[in-house]
Image (spheres, rainbow, N blue to C red):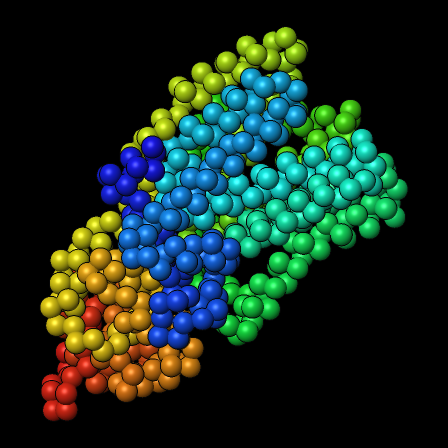
Length: 486
């Protein structure tokens, strides 16, 4: 119902990354050079592989419906895992329900699960990974190294591997969860056995990460892409300022009162290590998702409040765990109080929520581009290839699908040697060029044009709008001074 609500008001694909994820999935088959190499990108591959076949259907590609279905299913799994974790921590169902509502009523989470974004799938898989790890530990302690325990171990391993192929935030979660698992199993099963178990378990996510790095090296020429943004964060190089940004983001996405309750819950879990051992810390490994925005912002990555949405799941689990402080008979009352607090503080369909506001950043540009560049391109397009950087204009390529364009009409970075040759001399390869000239100082084609005055010598500027310029290859003898216009 929430997904239908956002679709009705036209916000499903408002976020530029929502359209970008559809582009990456679609280009696996719809491309000048189709094939498995098209999976390669800065983003991790699992969400795009899952959606690769559905988005070849134009209706799913243009609306994002198939990717939204994955997000909605992931949201349901995430809610179930939060309830599972909190029920185990508090030994009560009502706290589990209250904690789930802290997560499920959050307007930012609800908006993301109504879009093709990858955060919902990440949340589902990391929550499932931690829940399965806790089940495996409990199963091993009750039954020893039985088939049931080995099955539980394999399930946890697969969940971690899939999480590590979804978003980078899963990597520090998996590392910290495996470290806690070793500390739990070492004293109980013996360190030799614990190390063997850990290596067997770590093989799943380890193989997934290694496979991605090799794939990245083959496709992109680098083991790990780290040059895909222009540093512009005022907290760059200031760790305490970055921490303040992350905390501010979580509070803004939720509410101060809920964050305070969650902090109490985190302290509760730390305190329970005296009674239950290190296993009580496993849910807190979800906080490691903050490591990725911390490193990114420290390196100057532009601030995106979206990167803190995954912490809402940690907040929910910890808020539920805080109810374990209460006597068993009072936990039902505490659960009702937490539910009431969530209902008062959170407005589930808040159109002004931070995540919706961030998604709308590109909305004025969509309108401006459609009224100028799209109209101009549709009017004069002659079916020759259009050169454009997918890194900066992937979302606009998806916009153009509504005007009848396919990805095979574009020459982009995923086309390998053809793209590289066109960067040296585009005239033999393309009849058109789309160049982002303003955002983040301009894209790679804008930089190439500034560095090499001859790059656009064979092209004329046709029109522009919202910082996007359209160029067309001209015939011999046509004036070309307009191609170099600022």
